[in-house]
Image (cartoon, rainbow, N blue to C red; front, side):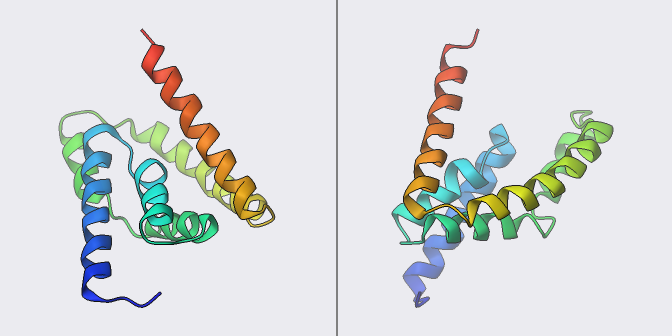
Length: 124
């Protein structure tokens, strides 16, 4: 993909939106960035997911985490345990994802988002 000024600004704005939503409600990567990269920037599902996962390699959320930590809203032990599982899970999930067709992967992603949305909407 050729990166002209419009694309660069669009991607930066997407990162800003995803980062804002991540700090606000704890979402960003999968819920916001993947669909936008696919629908607006023409990424394949695989490329969108891989790119979004790559962003987690750098501590991009450190300032948001610091704000939550200062107010006592970070359970460090749970976060460390989640990290252990996340490392293995992301490896296994990526191995599975690259074996699926674009269409199948997109449908799995959409179903997951739908199920989560319905559950959250009707949860008391």
